[in-house]
Length: 162
Image (cartoon, rainbow, N blue to C red; front, side, top):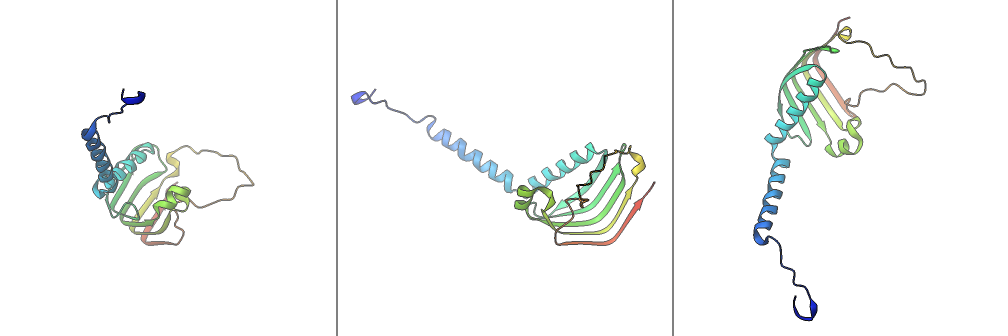
């Protein structure tokens, strides 16, 4: 105790603690803004969710993950019961707003999408039909990935096998 009953408070850890906090903040910023780390993370997340849908996926990812993304040599093949038999695309480029994605979800995030040299083969007989009761008050909407400004498809094929 100090004079007049005052308690002296000494800083815990001193310079070592401050150095660890600064190093942790630097590491976090490096992880957030380092493009190759983000691209690998986005690629692994996409492959993980595709595996849940019984798809084996391979592609090369380019671009800035925060505003636009380019996918080259995209190949997806069904490895189990799935509506998708195969998807092959040489080039796909999408521009989106990360801020809109975080606020509204994927329904309003994409602005422009361009797909070149793609082939989509769908086989709805591959999975059992999920019957949903019709709701008259609900309108039919396009999927959220459809862009709000422009969708450009060049040399694309859609094959539906039944």
